[in-house]
Length: 107
Image (cartoon, rainbow, N blue to C red; front, side, top):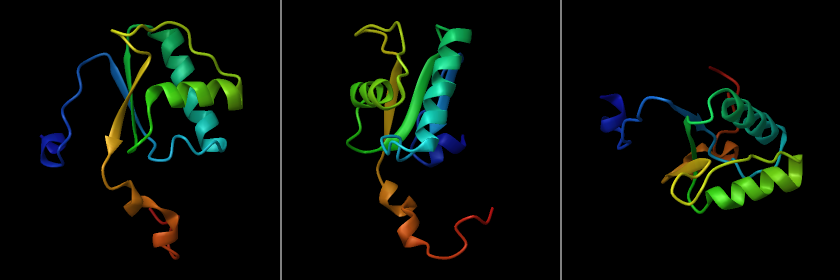
């Protein structure tokens, strides 16, 4: 119900989603993301993995970056069943830390 209120479709069972608006940033948080994705693929190879990221980021780009930057290669997948699916976030610029000079660690 909440997902439909904010314009997101409900996910199917056997799905895992990560909210990582700047998944293409290349920092330490991205390394953690890709090790988590790899662990899920190893434990549940049929699970669908969604990454909520800023607009303009493709699954192919993220997978290539994971391999190049962190030497993490994810096996499997096909054109009909990709390893991950990127769900674009329309207003990710609202999450930029520059917009919030104070209290960024509160919560």
